[in-house]
Structure formats: C-alpha cells, structure tokens
Length: 545
Image 1 (tube, rainbow, N blue to C red):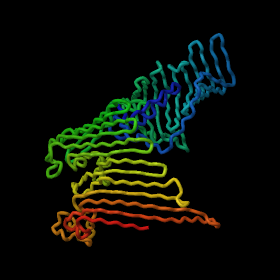
Image 2 (image 1 turned 45 degrees about the vertical axis):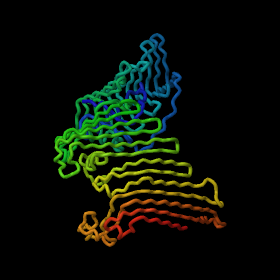
Image 3 (image 1 turned 180 degrees about the vertical axis):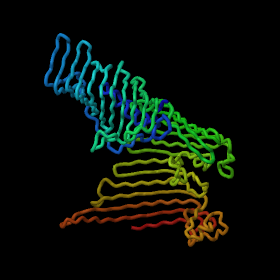
Image 4 (image 1 turned 180 degrees about the horizontal axis):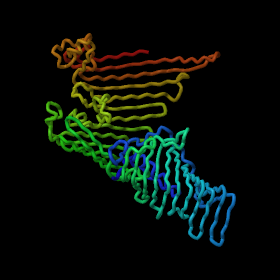
C-alpha cells in the first residue's frame, strides 16, 4: 500500500533536512497513518487544497539563524587528549555548541582517525529551530552521513513527541527507525508513564531522503495503550513534500439516482504554479461521472476551473425531472487578481446543463460529508467585481447572476451593476470631519415572487403563480417578495461631525447629515402586483436631513 500524492498550496518549497536529528521527517506522516486507520478508508491521504492546516495557536517566530562559522565550543569538567590514538574526550557535564546546535551529555569523544563522534549518557540535543532530542547513545561520522542514535526521544516545537529504540543513518540518505512511537497528546500529569490517549507505533520506519519518501512496516494505532488497527505496510511522502503527483484518498457515496459510487482521485503536480486533480466517480447505475479541477497561481493572483460531465446510462432514474437527459454536466470557475496594493478584481462563475445536476450527484456546494442536507444552498452565484480600498475610502462594483437550484429561475433577480463608494476627507471642514457615501443598484426580474403570510394562504397555495385565484394575492394574504420588471436606485449620503471637550471633561459631538434617493422602476403588470405597487414606469425622489 502506498500514498503517492500530497495536494497542498501551490508554489510550496520543501525545506532542507537536519542531519543531527533525523526525526522531524516522520511526525506528520505518522499522524497521517492514525487518520487513515481511524477512518477506515485505506492508505491514501488527501491534503486540502485550501487552508491545509488549522492551527489554533499562532505560528512560533523562527529563531535567528546561527552563524555557520564551523567553530566548536566545548565546555566540560575534564578534557582528555589521547595523542597516541588521536582521540579527544570530554567528560562530566559536557556542553558542546556547533553551528546553532547544542549537545549536552555525560561524555563526548571524537576519534580523529575514524572521524567519528561518540556521545553517551543523558544526551540532550537542541537544534536551531528549538527541536529537542533525548538519547542515551549517539555515534556519528563527522559529516553526519552515517551513524546511529540509541534510545531516541524527540520533543518538537508544536508539542508532538516521538520515541524509538534506535535510529540508524547510512550513505547520508537513509534513516531507519526501529520500534518508533509517535503521539501529539501531552503526558498525563499524575502519571507521565501512563499511555497517552492515542499513539502510533511502527516496528520499522525507513526514510529515503533523496526520494523524500517514508516507508512504514508493521504500523499499529493504539488508544490508551490498546491496539485497535494494524497496517502491515505503508508509504507516504515525507513532511517536507508539499505537493507530489499520485492518488489521493478514495471516497464512497450512494444515492437513489446513481446507485453506489466510488471516487479515486489522482493529483498531478504539473509545475510549481499549476496542478490538476482528476476525480472520476464510478457509479453502479449511471456509469462514470468525470470530474477535473485545474488550478494555477500567477504573479498577481490565482484562478481555478472545475468541470463535470456524465453520459447517463439510465436517464429513467430521473424521469419527470430536469435530469431526464442523456448528457449532463457543469463548469465552475473562480479567480482573484490584484491590480496593485489597493485594487482587486475577482470572479465566480457556474454553468450547468440543468439546475438539479449538482443536487442529484451531490457535487460542489452540495457535498455534505454528514449527509444532513440541512443547510444546503438554494442557488449558485456568478459574479464579477472590482474592489478598491484606500486609507479612508472604499469602492466596490459588481454584477451578479443567481442560478436557482429549485427551478424558479424567472423569479430570481439579475443584478447588473451594484456600486458602493465611501470616503472620509483627509482635511477638516469647518473644523470637523466630513464623509460621504454613495450606492447605486440596478436589477431585473421576470416574474413576481409572493410569500404566504397566513395559514390559509399557505395551505391553499394562494400565493403561487399557478394558484387558481390570482386575485387572492393581496397584502392581507401574501407578501410581495420581489416585483417583476426593472429597478434602479441611486442613494447619496453626507455627514459632518466634530468632537470637543468642555471644562467639566464631557465630550460633545454635534453632527449633521443629509441623504437623497432617486428611484426609477418599470413594474410589469402581472396578476396581483397592482395590489401592492403601481404598474408601469415610476420615478421618485426623496431627501431628508
């Protein structure tokens, strides 16, 4: 079994490896084993493309990088020089500092002939990033390419812990951990030796630094020290790999319309700035639903395109519904780009073969892992907007189109432009602060929308467009939610205010404001609308201060 893919943020750069510790490379992947075994979905791990990590704690500041001057400082109770055997030994409370890494031990010896460093007894090693390693014995070559660490225990800055009976390193590339244990649970305060809430054990963990892969043998997940799940073999990219092509976590779904479905996503890291995820869903009743998502990050922003398509084998499963057709599909896209440090333009768009496609196949916004479907969207929005923010000003202009998932497309408005602008002058006016804001909106709707407000109207469907008695749509029975036709409004508001403090320490803020609105509407004459509004063209203005 193998995990071949990680799908993280684009343009991620893998950091280098620490030759002293050999340990931080396995922590994230051991956690991945725990997640996979607990969910029962097999050996594939999928990392989210958006916000891959939700850490409740703020990131720790990185310590200043130590100067790489290759100078070693040694402090000990006794230093012994064996000139005959070319061996130097430091004994008793040994403290060694070298290129940002410190080592504390009972005894440290360096053999100049074999060029090996040996430390033993209560070893504590701290690297420049704050990672602490405890061990009983360490034997390394002076270039750290080969060696071993005995009775290893590691405490990382993110409060995770790892231990192993032995870690061997060879050829400067391979590190083998024997009997490794990993947990992110803090030790019990009353009994630190008590097993943690959960931990993952691996009889043998092999890290190939060149391939950036981790291979686990005989892994098991334990809760309170009790083994619950086993996995004979498991492989995954090491935590330094942010993006790697391969298969992601499979998924299983079921629905009356398409039967049972299984998804096996494949992630392709095309380049540091772009990737594609192919996610075919094989269904038992309708065939193969093709899904693909393309993402690219450019200098000024990023965009993504997601496409769906299926040639239905049994269109009769949706007889009498919009899905009763052979070919169904959709395309979604979104993007955001910065023009400069003050202006951003963005878009969201969706096109569907029919408005039931997403809900029938539980796609896009209809994905709900809990299957509750309690807060599902009623429409999909397509919009294009431009936003700018100054020191004391704001501008936003956008056009919006809603695609109804309920089939009442004629009742959904189309917003052509809606514009907002506000500004606070940077200089005083009559000794005070002057600000103003404007709003302009233009929209249209084909059919009126009525909502029942009485039990009788709701029970007898008096407010629907297909009701038997159109004259029943009156203000006492129905609420006119939206009228048919076009509507344009322009609003402007100005405000002045000034604060001063009187001799008693009280703060007074006199203010003055003025607002004006201009409205132009063209209301279509549909049954019941005239009971609420005058039909035809209407122009009106108002102002107040």
